[in-house]
Amino acid sequence: MNRKPSFIFDLDGVLVFTDRYHYQAWKQMADSIGCYFDEKINNRLRGVSRMASLDIILERADRKYTQEEKEKLAAQKNEIYRRLLSQMTPADVTDSVRKTLAALKKSGHKLAIGSSSKNTKFILQQVDLAAPFDAVSGGTNITHSKPDPEVFLKAAQFLGEDPADCVVIEDAYSGIDAAKAGGMFAIGIGDAAGYDKADWHIQDFSEIEKIAEELDRKAGF
Ligand code: BG6
Ligand code: MG
Figure 1 (cartoon, protein in one colour):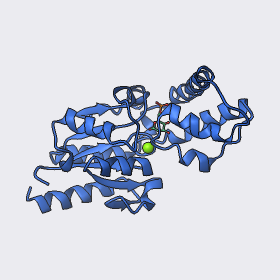
Figure 2 (cartoon, helix red, strand yellow):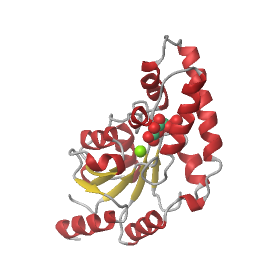
Figure 3 (cartoon, helix red, strand yellow):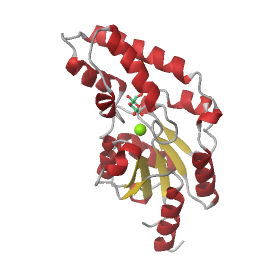
């Protein structure tokens, strides 16, 4: 590491617990077409784009769907999902998240978002969480979803940092794979805390501060 590390955060399931809203919205959509869907299948959708998620869900459908039908189903899910998101408030961000982000900024680290979601800006606005971030790379500025590293490479580029000086925080296996494919460090939290490809495995968001101190010390900052 040649510079003070920058931190790139996934959004859904890391900074905010919108993963449960994704589940509820997909479940309603799947029920409406009589397609089986459960939490285990939902875990496979972490980090995966909206259309790729739909393809995974439709593996259990009793017939094939045309592209036009799929676009309608994805729009139906997004409408339900946005209705759930619109009920979110700043109280939906934990103190641990706000305090850790503030501490990382104070100690001179750059912060970015790297999310596959096309709703990134809407979510940040709903929960009033845009301020600490120097850059936002979301689902609207990428053509390849995680595990492709594009969303994180764009975040590093927006920050003006080398990927080798960036640490990604992820709850998705596909997100850890994306970070490693981009030549970055990776911290696994939540579902990805059990993934051996991550460089660190944490149970609580506040542990990121200790990792930052350790990296700063090693790099001589
Ligand atoms: C990711 C979620 O952050 O965003 C995925 O982990 C989701 O589950 C993806 O499918 C796309 O989200 P959106 O908001 O663009 O439908
Ligand atoms: Mg996530």
